[in-house]
Image 1 (cartoon, helix red, strand yellow):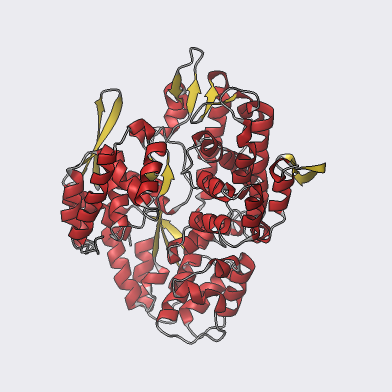
Image 2 (cartoon, chains in turn cyan, purple):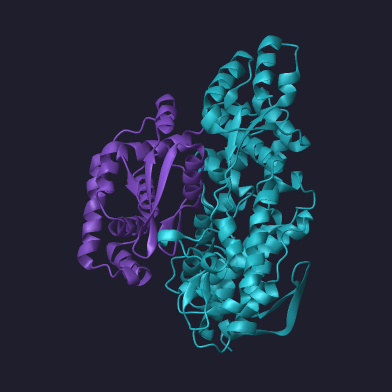
Length: 431
Length: 171
């Protein structure tokens, strides 16, 4: 039997708290899960620093990737199979792309991407096409199969239907992470009727559409997404941890560039600091490695690096104040000057964090061909954009809501052993 | 501090007015590929390179009152016009970012239509591929736009012209 069609002698199942079971029958999928690059995802948390706010949020990208695979498997096997717009020859390609879609994520990837200008999608592509175990498995299917999988994940494949199953406004990726993140954070917002949504999904030549009769289930999904955005992903305490994490990486990079001598050579960071990261170096990074450095950097001579690491490791986070840039940008300039006078470096200890700094979004209808919206399939075969039919969706997607916060170390400002007059002025401005 | 917002405001200010969200998205993407220091991350979407971060940042600037957005109906869809407000100009005067050649490039891009800029940004997205493969990508991924070989040649020529304006090495 050809490798691509090979089935395991018995179905394997993974017990999963969100989908109950993840079912694997295809040999290729089983082999991919066993590769070292996929196993690495066990050591990368799905929600980065959110565990410092919601202590249950320790789940990994491994859990999520299996979940996305399972949702796509159900879409295909339970709903799409046999429908005219679905070509069953694309089944394995779709399952592989679903399983591997987050393969290139690194530890605390949002902060790393920001500071070191990484792109996890480029690393996903490099792992799939490079000298890796994943590539060996995919190449056994056919020599051009890795390229096809990479193009689906990169959204540059001509097979737009498959792309939309994994990456669109209502895709397997979002449906898994909303439910999984809700489960592990313990909040009740992320619930929606996924079974119903799967049943009303219909494959079209270039996208998945939703039968009009399923609109209310989709409304529920949109509401979940909206609430998770504001209640979990955008939680101000998680953002504080993210701010400190980003500043640690900035400080370490700056010290390295200034030829600072670290007590312990940061060997895992050397190629990153030099901006010549090889795939081999990248794959050695995981959150255990990064946390090891944060532990030992607490003992560094540099007071900023050691302080920031202590804050992150011991969860002594920055406090925050609401900040309106339009009205308060002059105040910010004043605060910056006062921080310098107080001997507190504003580059590291006075930080504005905005909604645009976050890698999550909520539903927008996508006017003027920006990106593909959710389309409802009407009884007469016409497609209508969701917010034009649903008043609930229209009311939340039509309103702009943005947010800015100012982060600072309250403990430094309350320490009156030095610069007490200036610190008093700062506190008065922040109150 | 709000430097990324200031860069975006500066791009809109030197352009005078930018009509269309798609056009704005493509202009910033092309500028980023010309090594202007915009930090917004782009991914390939149904209609080419698109940045959710940029969309949110524009919304933030509108909410701050630094950017004026006018929504107008055009045919079957809505179109948006962006200009800097007086308070936006005041903010920028205190937070100006030095970006040489920005005005020349943005004025030129602003004279192009969104359809052409979509093609240019798609060509740039695949700039690691040889020209014939890029053309093949354009014809398959952008089949609904019905771009021609001539237009693809024009996109390449336009990229070289922009590189010349920014002092980048040309092919």
